[in-house]
Structure formats: C-alpha cells, structure tokens
Length: 454
Image (cartoon, rainbow, N blue to C red; front, side):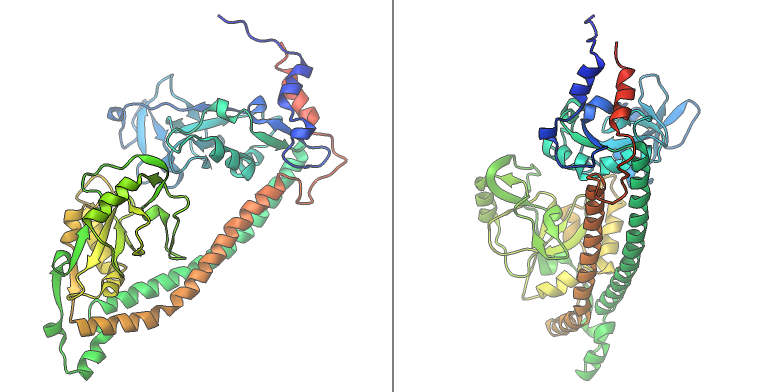
C-alpha cells in the first residue's frame, strides 16, 4: 500500500490558496481564493441494472435519484438498498455530471444517486450549505465546468475540478450574501411570474383562435358572404394527400462530427422567439452529408420541420439556402402547393388539432418518438384554397400580438441574466454586504487544514 503523503500546515495552505498573481478577480481583503478540490470533494453515484428498478417503495428498497428527478417526479424508481450505493440526504447538494443537464445543481432530495450525479462534500465549519449551493450555481463553478467537460456525455470527474478557483468570504459574510441573493431572487421571481401569466394568456388566446380557424368558425361570416357552406367546403384528409413528409436521415444513422464542417440542425438549434437558427453553436458534420441530402430533396419557401424525438411537433420554418444539414431528429414538411397553402398548414401544426394527434400517437410507444409513417397519416382539416387564404389573412392580423409576447420573453431573458449578474457580483464581494473588520476567511481555511496535518 502506498504511504500517505504527510504535509505541514504551510504546505497545505500553499496548495490550497490561489496566489495573488493568479486570482481571477479582486475581492475584499478578508476574503481569499482557493482551489476547489483543496476543500471540496465530490462522490459519484452508482448505476444498478434496470432489472432491479421498481416503481413503488418496498421494504429494503431506496429511491434512486436520477438527473430527470431534478425537474420532474413523473418517473420515480426504487432499488434494493446495498452498502455500495452512494446515499445522500435532503440537505446535500447534487451536481449533474452528464448530458444536457451537465452542471445543474439540486438539493432537497434524498436516497441514492445514480452514476450521472455527484454528491458534494465540504467542511461545514468553513461553508454555509446555502452559500455552497449558490456558489455552485454561479459562473465561478459553471463556466469552468463547461469549458473543461470534454463532451456532455463524457462529463467530468474530481480531477477535472482541481484547477477551479473559488472565492471564500468569512462565515458571517456568507450568510449576508445568501440572505441578499434570496431576497433579490424572490423579487425577480415574482416579476417573472407576472410576466409569465401574461404570456400564458397570450398562448391561451392563440390556441383558442387557432381552434376556431381549423373548425371553420373563424371564416363562418366569410363563407356566408360568399354563398358557401361549411359541410360542402370542409373535409378531413391525411397529410400525405396534400403534403410531403421527408425523413432527412432514412438510414437512422447520425453522421459523425466533423470539425469546421456543415451545421447539423435540429429543434434544439431553433429559437422560436427570434425565429433564428443557431448555426454557430450547432454540431458540425461533413460537407459530404449535405451533398447527399441535396441529391434527395429540395427546400422551398414555406417548408418547415417538426421534432420527432424528444420535442415532438413544434413547427419551425427553415431557410431555403442549403448551408446546413437537417438532424435525424426532425421531419421536413413540404406542402403540395396546388392543394394546400404552406402557411395554412404551418398554422395548423401549432394548433391543438395536431397536438392532440401527436400526444395520442406517443401513448402507443414507450419512447418519446413520432415516426414518419405516423406523420404521413396525420389528419388535417382541409378546405378550399380560397378559404385557406382567408384563414391565413385573418390569423396574420389576429396574431400580431405575438410580437408583444416575444417582447415579454425578452423580459424573462433579462431576469435570467440579472440573476446571473447578481451571483457573479455576490462572489466578487460587490453587493456591499462585506464587513472589513471581520476576521479573515484565512482563519477558517487554517482551521480545517490543521485537521489534515499528519
């Protein structure tokens, strides 16, 4: 067995403290910067086989907490309690190590964590728990974490965190920082709730208008003025009769990444508020993939995509310029313009009429997916081209308020940015809460390091 390294207090301090010339920013004189792993440890969870999962708590079982539990309690699972599991309590802080939730921080749960989560371990005589929670949520932890993580799938381990430079104020200052953060966040959350309520009312109104549009109620007066009758003009048709649904990757194989290649675009890259596509940050694939796609299908004005895996439906109109490749997770919808107006169909895909069919189709499968065969059989409420034109004209006018809703989304984005700014300033000592006469946090550091002197 290797002999444990014995270090003096001065040597431990030298390893723990960030030198003055290496500090990421200026902080009050009674603060310091330390290297993450000199004071903080993480313990990853384990991954028991799914054959052990049960959906209800039984004697001798414990809850297995997964990343999905950070946001939803719809799928709680339990596993046999064993000695090799990583247990944690509600007061403990968990960090997501993999996937799209990489770096997400959670507390308030208890049980055993799976391999995608890590429990944070730190000396409580040095850190208040809530201070640690907000510190891990701040740019001081999140930014370097995203920069060192090799991929969202590869995640991170303890060694990856060793170079992180973290601020440490005195304990009393930690509590004042927490109190002010939570006070300011409470006010911002109330403002966000008010804005969200207005947004929800816009969405409810929009859905109601779309429902009327595709049941014929919106154009009832127009039909009467033109001597037309609903039963004669309206019918239900399957999508494949009036439109083309294209699977961009019929082989179902995701192309390999290719540095400096062509943007690979799915629903995740689509900004529904700005109606822009994030080409810059999209994954890149070989130009040969684009050549193969161009040989199979064209893109015309009014064409749109819908998600078929994960995010189902949610239409997004795409540009005709072919400087990108469509993801394997979307389906391209093209109107047969002699039968249906593209924007009429685009509006319909935003309605509850289509959403209901998508949700019903999902119930038939264990995976959140909606294949192209099902898309081609989606039932559309269909009317004459002239009535379609009238419906599009009315919807364009009535839904102008969507622009106001998008501005409200900007308000919500600003609130998110304000929170990040508050956290950044808090851990630079810029919230005017520090008392310069309080004992330096260096004494806290020495206290815990003395216990490690062998």
